Image (tube, rainbow, N blue to C red; front, top):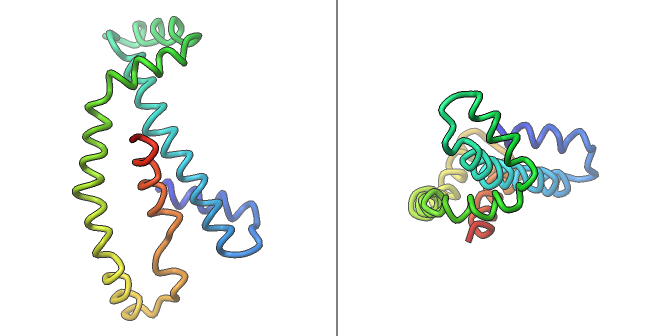
Length: 136
């Protein structure tokens, strides 16, 4: 998955300590979430709008490549329902489940004899919450 790939890329930078590795992974994962959720979703929806086949898609892409900034501005307002649904799902489903995780990590950590540093990956959990703050 994406956090594992970002962790491998961060390890390639040879950080001096574990905190630096977590911070590098957090940054990379956060920027990839922004790119995937905001930019790719908005640009693809704006370009695919009215495309019935690949020729129409290519024509829309070539026609709109020069005005990406205005495309993003109009696309964000058109996709407000998508982002509201994203916020609602994260707020009422995923984040409450995260509240139960410290207990689960404590039980699983003792069961599998995990070290404290490996129990909770901040670099994986925080970027999704940061993305919600960015959307709002």
